[in-house]
Length: 76
Image (cartoon, rainbow, N blue to C red; front, side):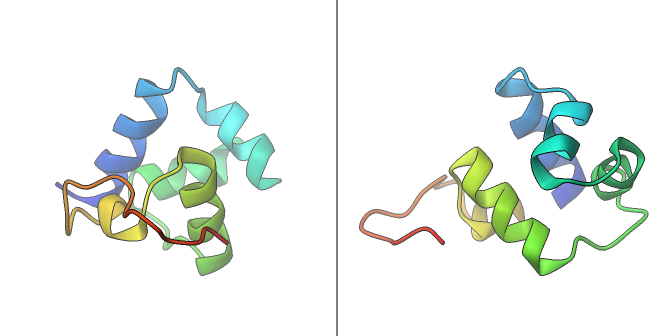
């Protein structure tokens, strides 16, 4: 699975719209959409924020693991 599909899957499972996520990131919806379809690379500052919003690890977003959150880690 690519990270765009994973982002969309997480977002829809949380019942959040692209518009709502874009607002949380303080970016345009069209910019966030580009991340989900992988037409644009996610800047690290937004990647960290998405991990905070979804309460998941970067490894989970990039499909390196099925573990959403590692125990005993400090979120940024």
